Amino acid sequence: MRLTLIAVGRAKRGPEQELFNSYQKRLNPGLDLIEVEEKRPLSGAELKAREAELIAAKIPDGAFLVALDERGKPLSSRKFAEKLGDLRDGGRDIAFIIGGADGLDESLRARADMILGFGPQTWPHMLVRAMLAEQVYRGQSILAGHPYHRD
Image 1 (tube, rainbow, N blue to C red):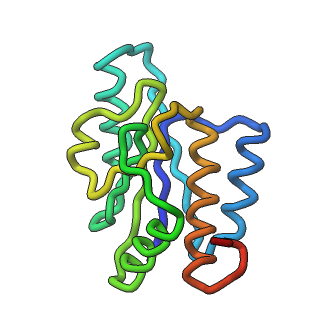
Image 2 (image 1 turned 180 degrees about the horizontal axis):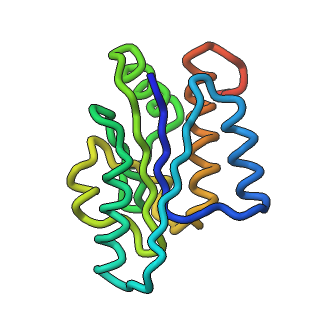
């Protein structure tokens, strides 16, 4: 199983990046980060559509697509771990996608196999990367019977 995170924007040095890196190093299999960014001065729907094109071009063939979106379904850590385990056991790769400041284009939401939310709040995109990496690590720990996660 291969894990990929495709995200809009380039991470800058700072606590969010350090936190992401900390969890990314613990993951097995690892979480490959692919950053995409539109340099042209686009805005609104045009920018979202272009970001969707950039993201779509990087989604691995056959991967189970998980879109992170504030309107997505929240899962407990244990349910998220179960989903990871089912996909792992089925030999599926997983691609997580995070949109830009205006969110994901509807075309990507429609294409996703799962739309995952970390609650109804709006989170900074760089922090969502770290939150995802932590939840993947937590999920792997749950599946391995490691005491990192406590009920």
